[in-house]
Length: 276
Image 1 (spheres, helix red, strand yellow):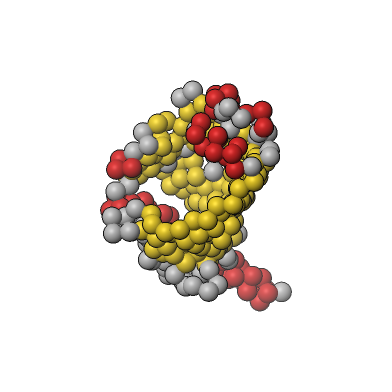
Image 2: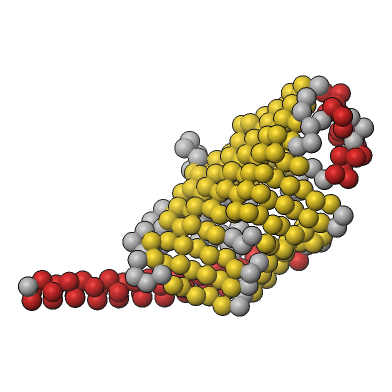
């Protein structure tokens, strides 16, 4: 019995030591990633970084994080960001975002509220922590700007390494019951032929990148080499739009390529496009 107790005590001490080493390494990695962001033109700030969850979890909390990109007139801030993981699976994370976030898009302040907004991130075990896949989900999402508001019942998204291309990521996104701004709806000449909500938007595409998505991506964000549109579909009342195609940046950085559109009730689609 004494030998058994001694073995248990040694294992407990070893596991506790592993947790504290892992927690410190995680904290340093978060600090290094945030410190590297200015090299990409992104100014970041926070009120503190803390790791909890002893002995079986590694729960990283960044308090009052902020990110600003003056060149793109964009910014983001929130009360916290959390990354949650099991200490024996440090390559699999759950990201939890607050139910209220503040953004700046092209210089315009935008408030984001959500009943639920979280993601699951899985990396390839290794020093670079190359991204393997992401699954994201949200519900009861609202975006409010100066004089406008958009609602969204549900969001689902996924990003994973493409099977046929090592330099590409497959992106899938689905939006359900998107409620356009009421002011926009009032301006549409064909509003009576449209539903109050866009019932479904599905996007499936392949992103070719010039660098992998790993822990170095914040300091040197990968650039898009090409985009393959596998499926883009919108259903809004009687209006249905499908698109496929391929795009790539030209010598000046603008999108170049070919997109094929298929529309049901194309006159309605044209009226909506003109009004918007």
